[in-house]
Image (tube, rainbow, N blue to C red):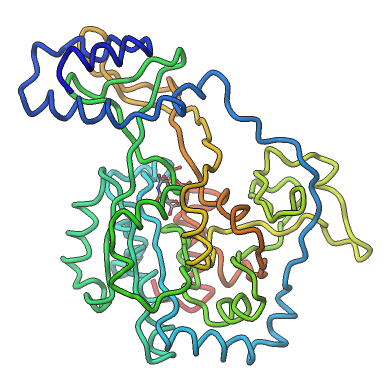
Length: 405
Ligand code: UTP
């Protein structure tokens, strides 16, 4: 787009200030800014003042395959899962495009060293967990690592520098997620510099469209299922044959690992049925009444807390690829330049980012098998430096599970 076209487009959305420094920009910077503006989804941006209403709908509990039931039938599940893995039907997707702001590390979160007497990087621990399954099955699971514009080079270089932590390069692929613009509280686009919008990763809900766009699924034509998982749970079971087998045999389009909520108001998304479809309801959307409802045995009725470990049937994913999922408008601290071109690093949230979330894809799958994961054995998330869900708490859980630090 040339200057006039850009100016017209921006003016139509009340965003003329984006071109304030145009005269100072080089040809390359103008090109970058122009491409960024062209890529803006204006409908999404407009949501800052009228976020989608995600409440409502009839909420009902969804039965979860309990840890006891899984243990009872584990032989059958494991056999089916292993056969699927050996046949190359399962791929794994590591979501590593987030910024890990709560952890406060500047590099990719997976490059964080959680070791005590030796270096142990988060990526290394995850790869080790996956390699253990590959060794057990005698087959390698294709691993797709999602990065973002912000950490792609660093992530790839980190893997290279560490010999991919032993993962065979022919089974490893990287792909980048898309970026989204952010706005201040009055809906004005924020600029990161004179020649660039303040862009940030567009949430983990865009993983499948970005994976498709990258065209790398075609390298593994036998893959029929994808196990998607977060970078920050170091006790994560990836390509767990039992989970995979149980989901395969259930005939459902999706499987979700969940831990039993520790207490009614725990801040985790809860897998429920909403108007008959499996849906993850965010903790802040759950009513107090539902949070506290119990079954005859005194167990919480809405107890399946999701831990971002899902299995998706590829065919179904392809079928719903163009469908919209909700955009979450999130208040954040967004560094930007002011009208005079000076950098501002806010101490408090100063604007909105727009993100889609993977948990909203469960509903599109239409059927889902929730499988209980035993918290102490499978859930050690690293979100913060100290306290709850921190490096400290994850180290403790790793040690209890026999990992030497
Ligand atoms: P979180 O919601 O914990 O976000 O991500 P985060 O960016 O890692 O951390 P904070 O909120 O800034 O502290 C859950 C998972 O989704 C991935 C993360 O890398 C993590 O594995 N993610 C998140 C993406 O891949 N892309 C995103 O845009 C956001």
